[in-house]
Amino acid sequence: MKNIYLYTLIIALLGCTVLSACKSLKSEEPDEFTVSLRSPSIEIGEVEFQMDTLMGFGGLAKRTAKVLYFPREDAVGLAYRQEYMNYHQFWSREGRHVFIEALKQYNEDYDARNLNRSGGKKAMKKYGSVEGYLVWQQFSFTVQAAANMNVGLGYAFKDRAPYFVIRQGVAEYKDKISRDNNRNSSILNMYLTRAQAAELSALFEQHYLNSLSLPGPGGNTFRSEDVSRDDYQE
Image (cartoon, rainbow, N blue to C red):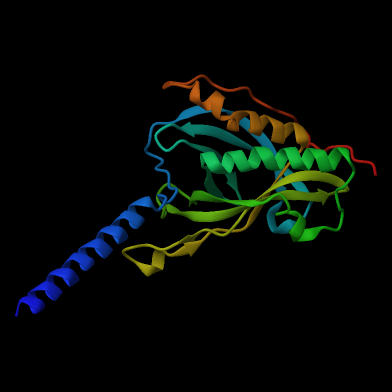
């Protein structure tokens, strides 16, 4: 009888140990990167970039994104509009670091004339990818969708000119109440000249973001009337 009690006690202790270990592992899992538009934010500037025109006809069109910092989530958001849709593309601290390092690699390849004109979609992710968070909505009265998505970093040639590329992947939103509200975002490419990418990289620098406080200062504006491009001769 004593042996039965002993075995029961050992099994119970082992069960508690396993359960405790599982809880410990679960608590060590990184939190999913999300951002609330209702969180306090600081508008830190604007950046310009290029995007494909509607349905891909007509080359590139210039776009402007407001850049906002959300201190609570330590996230930087790019707020812009494309094809009748409003987007908030969010970057975590890790994602911003990857962006800065990717731009350095691109500049090295650019200066060394190592960019491949026929690189295609593979070249658009040459410098890596990060997890981002996307909020998108067509009108204020329509569903506001939000989900994580993959962001590729690379380059592409457009009209014989090279651009640093942010490839915004598909975000899959699943409504908890109605499946009718489920939706996927579009794949979008943001084309940046070296000057435009450098402007964004400066706003991504952590020491600069750490210096901000609510309410924050307005950032510098980078403007140009025509579609920007870099001269590139092999």
